[in-house]
Length: 306
Image 1 (cartoon, helix red, strand yellow):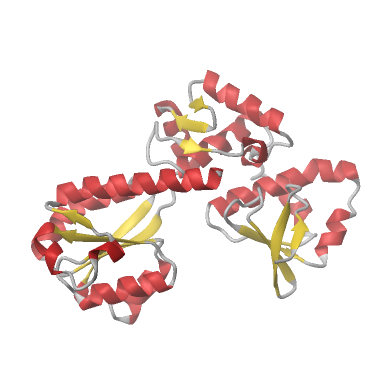
Image 2 (cartoon, one colour):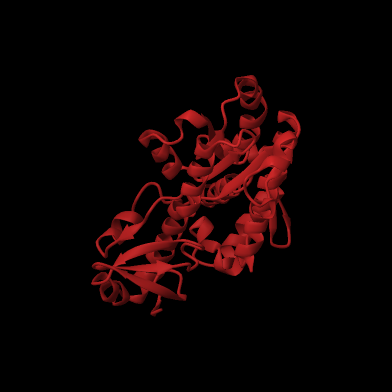
């Protein structure tokens, strides 16, 4: 794959052609993601006077990182740079920049005290739209002194006060759609809604229950496409649940399989192939799902750090 210098974070990264645009993949502007830059704009940006680059390029890097971290697509041209740099949404004061770091930790944690790994820190000063690492470290120390943040090496945790302040600044966390596929069990629906949905929501998801008789209509498949996570319960051996979950896997949407212990030995698939969570009560399943989502979040954070 072709590689090119990212003008905003100064890394050499893979690029992929997308029509008149180049897609920059996985640089510090968008770890694990990408942004698009009009190909003809590259030389115009590169030809900017050094003082101009020093003033605005780090702001563009921060803009890209914040938006792509919020799962928004970023497509840029040369003419966009001045507009972005002068936007009132770009933080200017140290306080505003610190709030952006709090909101980043808020998006990546389920509660106060939950660890978030930021590594390498040296490539993450765009989290606060800072021009260098020195300013980021100053902001971190300031937040620690204000008892909003706890730092242990590359691991960061929001205090209760930090969590509340970040939540207020973010205006509430934007939840990612999550679909729970089940066989029709009316006696469990209310219990699941009371026990499962709040736990899943704590991890940044907006869960919706979908019973088997509705999983193959067009609207339901669109719900699958729009989801960021699928939880497929196989207790009722519903072909429709298998179908919708398989459809999600084909779209590279993560699927967590579950099954009640009473039906675990009756599954039509090899248990080792899907490794379902085996549960006895809805309360137990809520705990197991919370453990699963917590483990995967930490594992993802560690993978990003490597």
